[in-house]
Image (cartoon, rainbow, N blue to C red; front, top):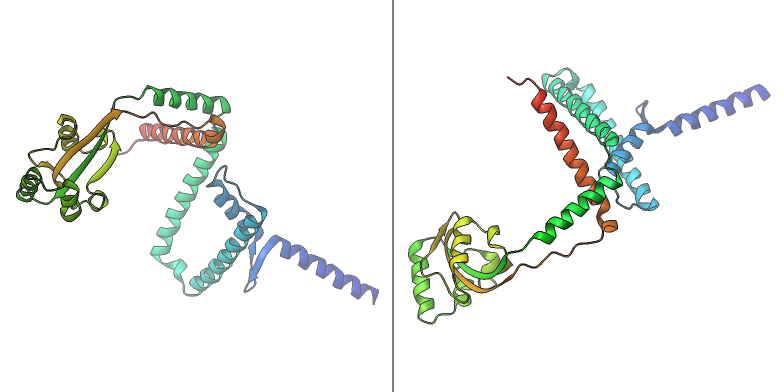
Length: 269
């Protein structure tokens, strides 16, 4: 009797251990916990520096666990239907193999080339110095955008006779964002506009409007310059607030340089 009880206890222990190694057993096939751990780690790696509470991590593991079980059920059904023997499956597997190799290569490179704090601080200082050098002018403008030159000329004539620019912008402008605001574009560096618009804007005097339609790839513009000011220097957050982002940007630059160097060395015919 004692021997039977010992055997039962051993079997229970082995079953518990097996369950700990798997998140589930689907139709007799185990779904290993290691697969769940790898999937969770992959998700967390895509959010470096992001905060996650124990409750959120538990919920994340549950959601991924459910997804892995669902995938196992569907994969088994695909095997039953012989999809593994199709050319489409073999092509997909070849692409998946290649993608896995690339992802693991990049992950390995990232681990070995993580920017040091000194590198990140140097990059932050460089960006701050660059931002502080920025100057020039900002223009506060408004415009009316229409489809054809004739309509633009008609609207210019109406404005010159006393019609209100903002009223016509709200009624006729094809630009829904600024049109609803009476053509208002706000303060901006002219370099941010298409070249034709930028050139016409910088040629205007404050308070004046273009007397001929300005053609661009968007249509025909009537532009009015409301004001000009010195460019506002951007607010720069302290290093400690952005160091994770700076480090990630530096790492992305290193990865891009690594990929470019491999491309240059490769023989592609």
